[in-house]
Image (tube, rainbow, N blue to C red; front, side, top):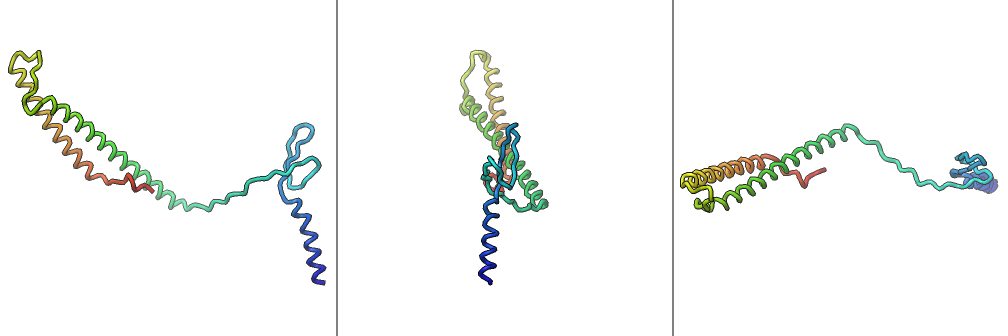
Length: 152
């Protein structure tokens, strides 16, 4: 008796497994119909599996976004300061090469010795200004946390 029931369940469920799926039918007018029941001239469509994404805690996501924005802002500040330092160092090197330890070459327009001395003095002042700028920028850079390699 139990064997008959089991056999009956197997035979009843077998045809259902044949019909499981999605079928596509195109009629004479070109109208496309999808169904889970096969019909004449329909073709079975193999669909990719459904991907289920778990729900996201929106509060946690908001915190992550705020943290990422702060990190991005800090990294941009750091990069901007590093670029300014690079520009100052480049300009300082140019001025020092022109200054030549207080004995720069005389220009043709400096026939008057006082003009030469004025240019030497202005180069010396500019070197001092650039060095102070570099000190200020380096101190500012020390105050910005280094987060470049710590992004979430």
